[in-house]
Image (cartoon, rainbow, N blue to C red; front, side, top):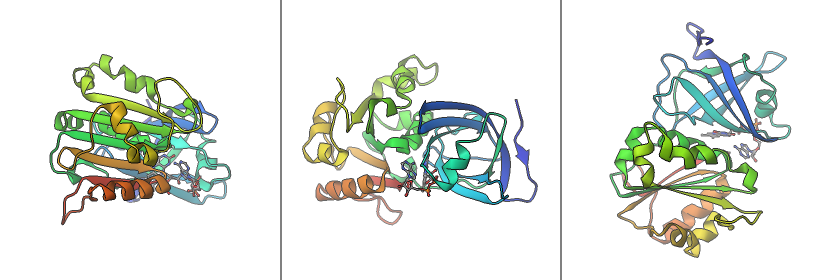
Length: 262
Ligand code: FAD
């Protein structure tokens, strides 16, 4: 197994890509070695750097998919056509290296909330990444009675990690908690049995999501995280605000925490 290389006084370490898995032609996951000192809370993100041919380094934020106790780091990435970072990233192979900032970042973490009964994790596209990290942390399972994981994509083939999520019941560590999880795939541009087919905003407005799950959104019992497409985050926040939900802040705890991906 290749090692993480500590670049002494730099603000980053150099990590080796150990695994790459393409989900579609524009979505893939990859694992890297984990810097020894790199600690994070489930839901946080790393800053990853790739070196261009001219030597310039391009940095972008990437949520960890892997859990805080895994020995490797795993990420789930889009490939943006012509995107400065992902054009370089998607060319890398197993054995190649990239840079990872020593510092962990982000506030999409469970400590934003006071204790409650249900955790709603609403994501679009690669925005499911931080929620997968949370499902890899025993603390998440111990903190809630129900965890509702909603993943909205355009096409069924973009439902990455579906097998891993539905297979949690057989997981050696998390299997005992898996009955708490309700997984809701949402597909907006295709009809498929057992999935919902509208924008998340519509599904909250018309009660379709709550009906599907069999649990109501409730100011006391629900804590809600939104991650992914900024338009979804803004629109959904408005809809939830109309129902009395508030963004959680240090000075004033609320029920909502969000992460915009661009
Ligand atoms: P950019 O120039 O950065 O983006 C160009 C355009 O591509 C954007 O304007 C937007 O329209 C679109 N775009 C960017 N990112 C995405 C995306 N993830 N899904 C769909 N469309 C997108 N990206 C990931 O793939 N996985 C992650 O786990 C992830 N975590 C992030 C966490 C944070 C806190 C933030 C702020 C962003 C995160 N991103 C993630 C986005 C990522 O940082 C880059 O934007 C992405 O890799 C594209 O980089 P680029 O230079 O190729 O294109």
